[in-house]
Length: 243
Image 1 (cartoon, rainbow, N blue to C red):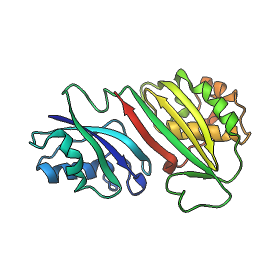
Image 2 (cartoon, rainbow, N blue to C red):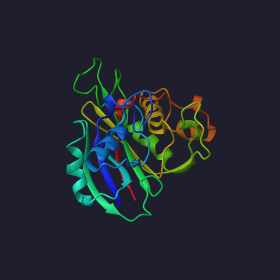
Image 3 (tube, rainbow, N blue to C red):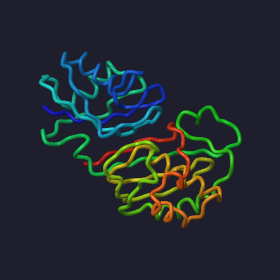
């Protein structure tokens, strides 16, 4: 039986999704919970990696099991063995040819910023702080240049190796409510640090260091040096994955 699980987690205390030797990860915690519940050492495959400190509202993963536990019961059963900052919020059986990573059609991320001269303790875990004003109208206008299929090499972290840097963005927008700014972007896939660099580039537009139309030239340049800085991880959340 192949089981899909939808996971919500606070990534603050984890070295990202994927198992690695230098610290605890979300994937490791879930695989431990599956083993405790079923006695099986299952590989839990996520829709994609989230970096250290990045959060998820709707990460999707799958594992194959011979357990007699009904698929829909895995969510409450696994939660008994998971820490408070990782929970499975849904579980269901899928066909064997559906793959959490390779079958994903689109993903939606949000990057959250708050504008304040001083740190606010209740924001610091889930927002990045900017201590100067931002023009959100210009930031939202700049988002139109992200739409469509482009080579996003300029929004790939320096030193990363990937065969194909072309991605398609279906929607992108910036909204402000009070002192909170949310950048929401949906695409068929994202490069390493892509959303955080896009957010950093929009911050430069909002601060006046870049013009709205500069985004077009940055994309055409394919140069990481032309784009904005990489925003901190805690502002980023994987919102949903669609199949």
